[in-house]
Image (cartoon, rainbow over all chains, first blue to last red; front, side):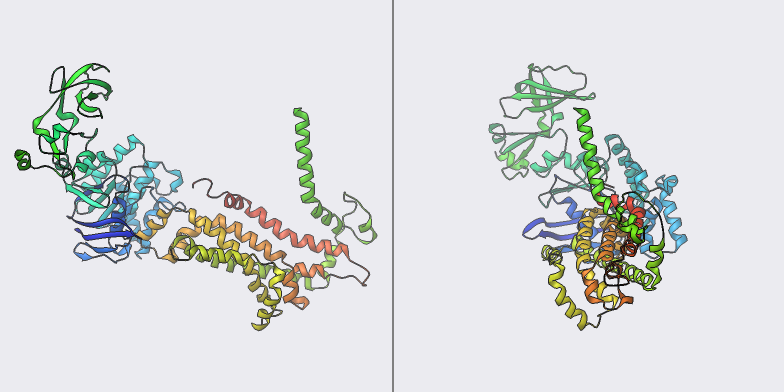
Length: 341
Length: 274
């Protein structure tokens, strides 16, 4: 039902520029994840779309309608907060009905909508409980339910999983994906600092850094073709290995980047070194290798059952097709620039 | 050693309890005695008579004076809480220039000794035509109830999570709805605590009540009790005074007992997240 357009949006707190000149356009029904390190402005940007923060300059429109100065409740958006923000003195039902009461809906219309949402989220039998009597996962569902009942055009999530434990986080993530499939027309914007959430949930990821957009793209596109050294380092875990010095210079770049899985490890190869430590995760083993190329150890991915021991001499070979090169500004070095060097 | 420590501890407890309770206990004791018996020193009840209690109501105005006190204290509490909740919402939740200064100003109001503002207040009360009206007390008592109700509720309201308010904003609630439907229910413990303190303060106040009211039917109980006089100027009717004192203490005790749970949670609020 609604596209979301940000045009040259800025946010200043006093003299401090938090968001500088962000322009984005989100399609209807798209699941977009804002990701970035803490303090990059991703939550502020979300709150500006919600209307909880004023937009210092620039314009916001939702569904083609200018919303820059509209009240939050008139924007057709609903938000799920990090701490759930349920009203502690109200039951689950009252929590979900509160927004509808404010919109002056009839009692039975409210009932139908609340019960519908409760059914969708399987919290029907919790409807008379107070938030205190709910587990973290249940509270999260109620928070989502409260947002659903308002039938928003745009759904905003502010790090909704960060208060849940690891197992529940995975489960809720799947549930949000399902919710998105069910509410196919609803545009969803999701803020997180967790790149696994970003990679798994997003149709498109917006990487933010220091208040500006570093790159916008599909998860794998960002992974394969990072538009800057920042994105290359931020997306992917363990992070990309970065090398500076002659090895980069011979290719006409300042920084040479290679992901752990693109670094073959064996007895012989291009870069000899020594195993510093290994992290066996079951399916994969990450081997940290000390080399003469950089003061930082390089990380290479090996199969799960490989047996590298600390101190063992090994050699690494980068896959030439998977090398990422960046100039002094952190911008990618193009093939032409590379050929010239 | 352990035994000495224990004995010392309980001795200390006894002293503290006695110091706190004895004056009131002695008033209760005296109120049950009459005639010459009042002047015999005894620490356990010898006779229990209700003559003094009957006498307290005999002249007819004491009941009226209790109602005066109830009226003044209740109106002061209601007005203070209403003003304090709305003020503290602004002071705690809405960022504006000079917030800190306003809070300090409010606090500084309570800094002046009553006697220092008495004559000025008297002039104001006269000018407003409130002399000998209970509204003069309502007006003047707010001078000391508002600073602490505003301060306590502001501190309390600051501790309520911002996200709850933001959720209500997203739900389309206006500020007054947020105060009424979201904040008030969460503020109950704090409101009961501050309301009760304000009530006690208004109930016990003496100096303003003595100054601003001139006729017997308008007086509040602390002044009324102090002005109880005997048959001659040489007689101080201790029995009646004590009986009246006990009567006016009971409502406070009852209030504290009724609300004690809320008071405790109000005083410890913020220590544990809800």
